[in-house]
Each structure stands twice: as structure tokens, then as C-alpha cells.
Length: 162
Image (cartoon, rainbow, N blue to C red):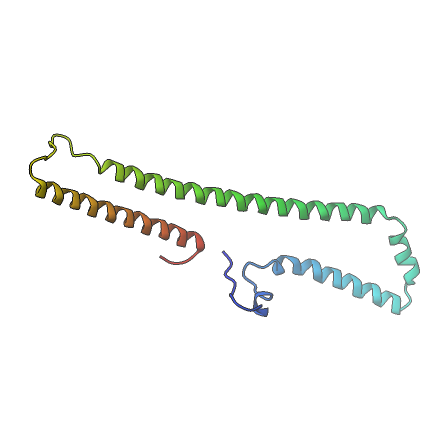
């Protein structure tokens, strides 16, 4: 995950090497600059006039059309792939949030019943109250533990340390 600095616009984010497309784009940019410089040298030395070289390249517009179609296809494809990945991640996060909620609800519901073999206490209200308090305290600890587990999972997804 790429960590950007928050706040006002930071110029350092533009020149970061980690997570940047700069290393992969640099060879193509240098090749284009070299070819442009070579063409300018040929023109200044009058090895070939610019009308001859550029006229041959610009006379057929099929190359530009194919290039434009190819670049637009790549841009649309990359954008669509990134968009689908984003929504897939959102769906998975909501799914695990629902699983945590379902787990907590089921465990709290299971605490409502007495253990097997134990008869309900009707005549001794103090003992019943202490049992209810213990169950309620257990439910609170259970929900807090699940909440902390959920926060830890979200922090891990964010890239933070737990």
C-alpha cells in the first residue's frame, strides 16, 4: 500500500520512487527523447530535411488512428479493472463485517439459555440475579473482544500496525 502524506498538496508525493510508474516509464521517455534529439541533429546537419522525414511519417494517418485506439483501450481497460477491484474489496470488507456481527449475535443469543442439566431458579432471586449479572458481564466482554478483533482487522487492511 502506498502511504501519502496528508494535508496540503505535497510535491514530494509526485517524485516518490516507491509505488510509482516512473521506473517503468523512464526507458520509453528516454528512447523518445533520444530519437527526437537524433532527428533534430539530422535536421541541423542537413543529412535529411525535415520535410522529407516528417512528410513520410505524417502522410499516413492510419498509424495515429491505431495508436489512439490502442491507448484509449488500455486506459479504459485499466480504469475498469481498478474500479472492479475497488468494489470487490468493498464487498469483501462488508462481508467480514457481517460475519463478525452474525458471530456476536449468535453468541449473545446462546447465552440466554441455561446450560444443559441446570434447572431454572424461581424461588431464590438473589442467586438468579447473580447468574444474570455474570451472563451480562460475559456478553459485554464478548462483544468488546469481537469489536477489538474487528478494529484489528480494519487496521491490518489499512496497513497500520496492531
